[in-house]
Image (cartoon, rainbow, N blue to C red; front, top):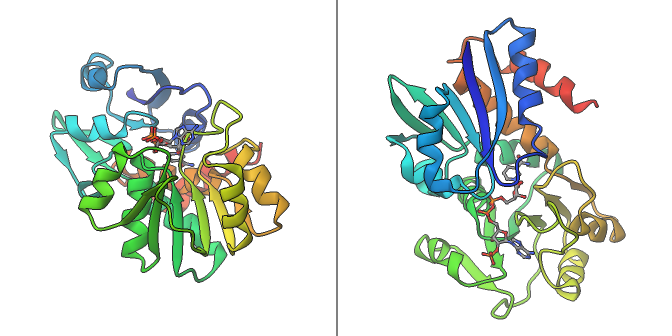
Length: 263
Ligand code: NDP
């Protein structure tokens, strides 16, 4: 039996086991997907091999650590510097980032957008900034603290802290912070968020399955919005395809996985 897991801290909220196991069950694939709570990202590689895994997903806060421990990184993950999918290939750990394309697929329902404000500067923000720019949607990054902005500055993205941010309007406001994931915090000061939302066409919180404080503010201004469920589904479809070596099609994976979102 092939074994897969998701590494994270926290990880108990993750829907990934349900999503991937539904595909394995539907298509009689001899595999099982679990959760692994991991507080030390530097131990990820050792734990991966100790558990004899064939692949894994990586969530908050270990995506940058995962990138650093791969034997090879492929595709857009090379530009992002963060990995959310690991696949064992002939004893080597191969890293991918399926968050980026998963997000773009989820954004399609909003129609045409020309610019975006990404709130947060972690691994998910890197993925979204890179793929938005590739898709001709200009991203600006706004983060609580300065430290994580280096990557964005080095890669010529406009990036600011709350203190340096010059106010402007954006078509879409995207929360990529973990504020609201397991607390009741807003990802940026309330007055600034209200002003940003009043000039926006739509909003996305990448956190899923929870009415976060961010989404509660979005609902007040009556613009189209979505949580992270669509992105989760899309990144999961791409990851599952990599896990099982393309033996079943994207549409077949989608059919089995989407059913787990009906509950
Ligand atoms: P990281 O740990 O890499 O980055 C976290 C970011 O959140 C940092 O910029 C940090 O700012 C900011 N932050 C944390 N707490 C607060 C707060 N209270 N107020 C303001 N900013 C805060 O996380 P990831 O990028 O890996 O993941 C972020 C979120 O995205 C998680 O909630 C994760 O579950 C979700 N996600 C959802 C996906 C989906 O498929 N729907 C896919 C990928 C991620 P600072 O630098 O100042 O510390």
